[in-house]
Length: 125
Image 1 (spheres, rainbow, N blue to C red):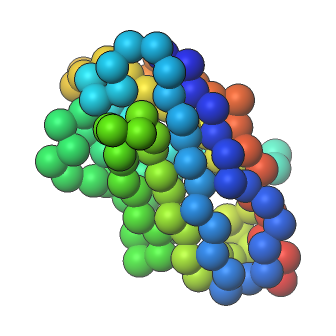
Image 2: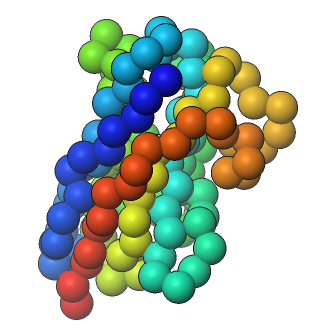
């Protein structure tokens, strides 16, 4: 599966953005999907995930009151709605995919085989 993120940009603190991740290749509905981000000079970190069956969603504690994750299997697209953005949300955001269920934690980047190229989100204070 090939993944392409879009929707990043520059936004003021308190603003909103919606990131999209378009998928092509094998059936999108067969993939568990995740969002990760990498702030400048830091390690890649988990943001959100939604399993291939879509029965639940997972969000990092730092974003769970502000972000939401969803998927539209008919459009082969994963979304990350980001509200109440803070300067510490500044990062390159990546979507990731793995076929069906994961063997381990949805928060672990090593569980995902496929990655997009990333989209930059910059939040000014």
